[in-house]
Amino acid sequence: MAIFPFIEKLIQVKNEQHNIYQELNQARELLSNCSAIDKPVEWSALLNNVIKLAVKLADIEKELKQLGHEHAINNHGTLPY
Image (cartoon, rainbow, N blue to C red; front, side, top):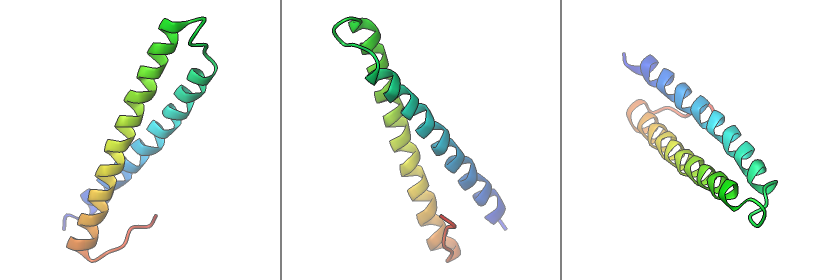
């Protein structure tokens, strides 16, 4: 059956979500420690990075939701988280 590749994919996406969440928190901290007035170019680059990571995290969460829905519908199962 194809359940094991599905679970492996789910675990991979969940780990990716965790990693991106950590990167986003670090980027937010760097942004909050940077002055938009004193270093506008650096602040802008940091803001762009935060936005990029937030969008990537939203895409990953969308994929996780879709995988969870597929698992519930196709395998009549529940996810462990």
